[in-house]
Structure formats: structure tokens, C-alpha cells
Length: 263
Image (cartoon, rainbow, N blue to C red; front, side, top):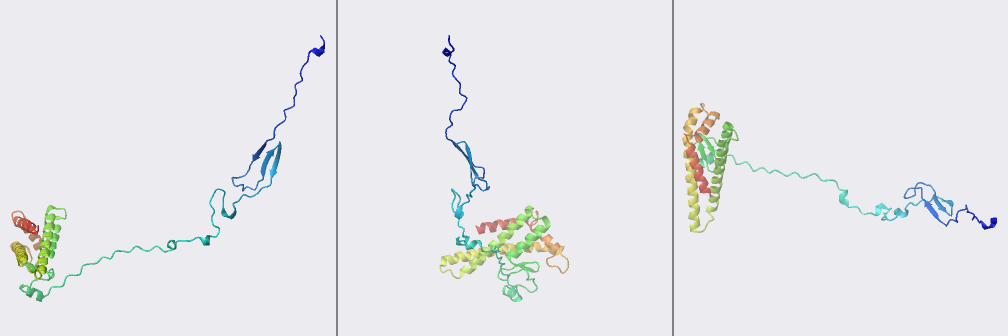
């Protein structure tokens, strides 16, 4: 057999023709601010484009809003430039001091001379206790202060003294208001109601005056010579007014009576 019959195909070692393609390579930051060129690969060759800045013009970034380059055109709220004001401190208005009682005020209420008037507001009904004159508020405060001095602020006796103080102030204020409107009441029936109210108030204040008179004798025994209302006599007054087996029952009865009268 001849050699022509055995045909061995030749294997080609050459590569098939490559299609056109290109690759874009960017070797800089997203905004291409590094100053490097752009590299482009196409048709098997590498091309380098010169670097071009892609900085936003006129203050605009791609996909972003534009900002004005002239900040003087922007309006500014003048409130931002105002200096913060210091907070206004509330003014504490003290009540006016009560008028100083005089001997003429004492004579108008038919009080004997020689009583101490420093604890009495002459606009209020006078309450006498061992050579001193009180009004309802000053008497309640004096009793409460002595009670706290003796037993402290948390004792049950201090609570009783505090309630007594409030009751004395309430009966004094209501009586004073009734006296103020008594002259302006025109109806006869209403005038009688006001007069009955003032009469009942006066009876309760007389009951208080009798209770205080009972407490004076032990105070005189405990006080020193020429002493009207000193520490010893004041403590003895508290022991008598709130003492069990002494005058506590009368004190509680007076407080219940005033509480019912007020309500």
C-alpha cells in the first residue's frame, strides 16, 4: 500500500483570531483626584489617556445638589447672632409688715395699761395671756414654736399644735370678713345671719380666752420674778394646755367645736 493512502492531518498550533475587546482600568480615586492617567486596553494594546481633573465645577458634584459659592447671598436668621438672655429671676414680694400697736390701740380695745404689745397686730382681735397681747396668728405661732422646742417637729403633740394654729387663723379670717361685709348687707334676714355668725365667733374666742386664763396660774408658779413669758413659763403653758389630766380635754373640745363651726 502506498504512503499516500495514509493521510495524517496536520495540527495547527496557531491560535484562532481574537475578537476585538477592550478593558477600562481606572487607577485613581472615585473622583480621579490622584493625578494619574487613565489606562485603556483595546485591541491587545494598552493606551494611556492624560490625567484630567473631574473636580465639580461651580460647586456641584455629580448626583449632588449645587451649593452657592457666594455665601453672602445666603440669608441668616438674626436670632442666631443674638446673645442669650439671662433667665429672669422671680421677684419675691414680701407681705407688708403689720402696723406697730400703740397705747391708743390698746385703749380702743379697753385693755389695761402695762401689757406688752409687740406680738399684737392692732387690726386683729386682741388675745390676752399673762401680761402679753397676741392676735390669732401670733398666738398660734407662739404655741407651735414652744411645742416644737419641747417635743420636736415629728411628735404627735406638734401636729396638734399645728392644727390649733390653723384653726385660730381660720376663725380670725372668717370673722374679719364677716365684719367687713356686715355694713353692705341690705336684706334683713341676711343681716341677721351675719350677726349670728359674728356672735358665735365671739363666743368661741371667749372660750379660748377662758382656757388661756386657766393656764396662767401654773405659768406664774414656774416663771421667775419680773418675767412675763419666759422659757420656763412657756414650757409650763404647753404642759398645761396639752397635758393629759390637765387641760388637754378642754383644748381638744375647743378644737372640735371650732372645726364644726368652720364647716
